Image 1 (cartoon, rainbow, N blue to C red):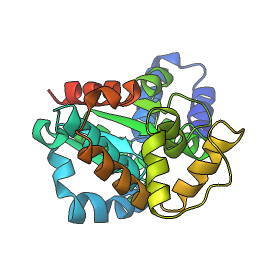
Image 2: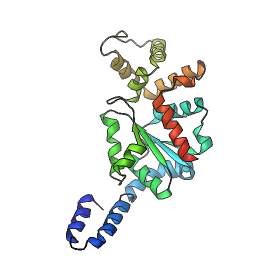
Image 3: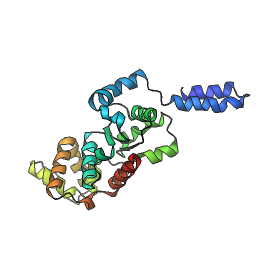
Length: 235
C-alpha cells in the first residue's frame, strides 16, 4: 500500500475512526511485502550463494565488498568473530536493495543493523529502508552512517589512523601523489587514488595491519561500537 493510498483510505473512512487503526496496521505491514522483483534480487544471494543468512541470529548490512572485508577483520581483532556468534555480514550493494533485506529480516524476525558511507551516495541507501515502513526512531537505532558527514570509507580510514599504511601501500605500487601531507586537498587526493581499486587497496591494508600485529586499539570507535552492538543482538 502506497502512502497516498493510505491517506485516501483515512479520508474515505473519516467518519469511521474506529477502523483507522486497522487501516494503519495494514499499511505498516504492507511495507514489508516482498515483491517478485525483491525476491529476484535476493534469490542469488540469499538462496544460492549465502543460504546461511536465513539461519543467522543477526545481520549486519554494509555497502560493498570493502566494508565486508574490513568488518570481518576488525571483528577478528576484537576477538569477536562474527560467524561464531551467528552474525552474517551482508554486502547489499551488489546483491539487492537494503530495503529488500530489511523486509526479509522482518519476515524471518532476524535482528539487523546497517552501516553506510556518510556521503550523498551512501545516504541514498537509507531511503529504500525508510520506504519499508521502518519508523524514524528505529532508523536512528538500526542504521549507522559513518560519523563524519560527507565522508566515504576511504576518506574515513585516512582520517582515522590508517594514513601511514596507505602511504606505504601507494609508494610500493609506485603511485604518484601530487600533494604533500598537510596540503589542502591532500586527504581527498589520496582517497581518490584508493577509490580506483577499492578492494585491492582494502586487501593490501588488511595484510599490512596483520603483519603489524592486529592492534585492537587502532580500530576506530565507530566500528568497535558497531561490532559490539550487532554481536549483542545475536545473543
